[in-house]
Image (cartoon, rainbow, N blue to C red; front, top):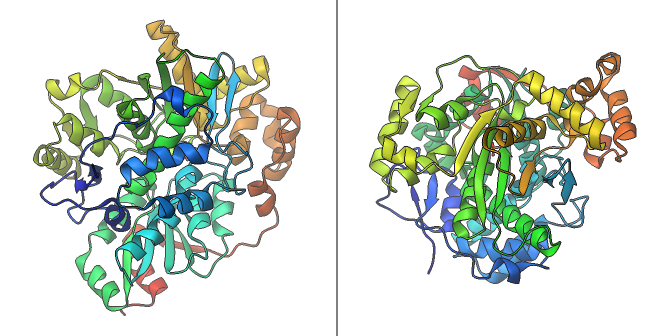
Length: 497
Ligand SMILES: *Cc1c(COP(=O)(O)O)cnc(C)c1O
C-alpha cells in the first residue's frame, strides 16, 4: 500500500511523497506526516550483513512509495559514496561500555550530511516526476550544521539555488568558516543579527508570504526547504537506526529481538523522531532518551506536559542544540493527539501566540517511551574529559551532552540495556570547546593549532572538511537584521524592487 502525506494542521488533502519533498512545508504552516508508518518487510536477522546503501533502500522505499526502484537506488548511490570518509558510512564504535553511532563521516562532518547528501537528489527527482519547471530555491535557517551540509549538497546542482541564514554570533568559528567559504554561483550565505529561533521564524514567515511567492512564480522560481521539517530529511535519518541494530546483531552484541536504548542529542527533534519512526517500523528499541543542553525546553516538556518557550535563550558550547522551538516535535504532538490535525493546530496556534501549550494527560501517557534530561556546560565538559582519560575516545560537545545525559539516565533508572548514542558531530568541528574541556592550557592556542593538537592526542587524522577551510578565501560576508530577510532574498533572486 502506498504511503501518502498530509499536513499536521489540516489533513483533508493528501499528497505523494515526492510532492511533500518538493513543498517542504505545507501551505498552512504544518509539517507533512505519513498517513501510517510502514512496517519493515524483513526481519532484523534478514537485514544483517547488508550494506548501508542496501538498508537505505529497504527503509526508504517503504516511505517514498511513488519513487521507482531505479530512481531511489540512483539517489542512494549518488549520496552515500566516497564523499564519506568511512566505507560503512556510519561506523558503530564502542567506548566506555556504550556504542557511539558515528554519523559524522560525510563531507561537512556533522550528522546533517546523512540526510542532506541525499535530499538534493530526491528533490530534483521529485521535480522531474511532478513536471515542475520552476527553479527550486532552497531557503534554510541553520543553527550551524544544516547550513553547510545543505550548501555542500546543493552547490552546483542544476535547477536549484540555495539561501542560508545563520545567527551571526551563534555558531562556532569553524562552522562559520565552513559556510562563508562555500563555492558555487547558486549559493548565498547571510548572517543575521539574532539567534537561531529568529532565523527559523523569519524563514517560516518568508515561506508563508503569498506576495513573495507570487513574485517568485512570475520569475519561474519556487521555494523549498532543506530544514529538518522536510520529510525528505526525516526518512533518510530512519535508516541509520535500522542499520545500527543490524550491526549489533551481526556482531553478536545483542540477541535477536533484544531491545536497545537510543540516546539522541536533540535540538529541532528531527533525529530522535527518526528513531521513534524506526521503533514504529519494528526495530526493537526500548527507551528513546532525549538529551538537551541548557536550553532544556524539551526536558521540561517531558516532565510536565507543558511546552514553554518563554525563557532566556542560552548560547552554549553545543550550538546546534541551542533551540527553543523544536519544530519536529509537532509531528509527535500530532500523533499523540490521535492524528488529529485540528487539535494539533490549536496547540501550535497557542505556541505562536503565547509561546506555550499544554498537552492532556491522555496525550502524556503516550510519551512513556521517551525519557528527557539535560546536561549543563560543566557536566558536558567533564564528560568529554572523563571519557577521553578513561578510553582515549574524544567526543564533540553535542555528543558529550548525550553521553552525560545517558549517565544520568542509568543512575536514575538502573536500566543497563545495551545502548546506542547518536554521535552527531566530529570533535574537529568544535575544537576549542572540546580541547578546553580536556585541559584549559589549550585555551591559548589558535583554532588551527588546536586542530593539529586534537589530531595528535586523539590519534585521528584531520578530516578533509577541516583541511579544506584552512586556507580557503571568504566568499560571503553578508550580514542583516532579521527585519531585512525578505529584502535580502529578493535582491539575491533579482526580483521585485
Ligand atoms: C542538528 C544537530 C543536532 C540536533 O539534531 P535535531 O535533529 O535538530 O534534534 C545535534 N547535534 C548536532 C551536531 C547537530 O548538527
